[in-house]
Length: 179
Image (cartoon, rainbow, N blue to C red; front, side):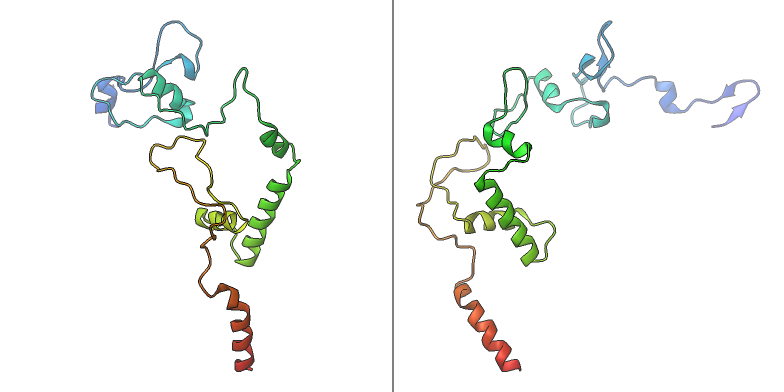
């Protein structure tokens, strides 16, 4: 910024324009905090990014704009009258069921066997199918962008190549030929 003895510091264009009207603004004499903000955006401010460091909740913003998304059944938000299921509560307290322990042991074995610290979601699905899980019931969650389907309980996992069962013998034969 340039300064002059007569005028003082010169203001930039942004400083001259004053405050912008496109962000969350205070409404009335309320306590300061993220919930005392007006979440409406001014006209022409579509697609603007809201700084998440402000503590604004996207769900509250969507409600204020009347765009509440339909529930998927996966939400875990708790409030008055909402309690954890025994299944979730025991896992959070460190007491796993046999099913949870077996899943974690299988994922751990996969990570060690394949030298992967962070398995992909496809890897996790492969482990789940190899544990014997199949999609035999109608889904209990509502997904807008995925079609629900079912399969017989005795469906093979289809995660291994065709000659997977013969792999150990093939590897042993290759090792003896190389020696």
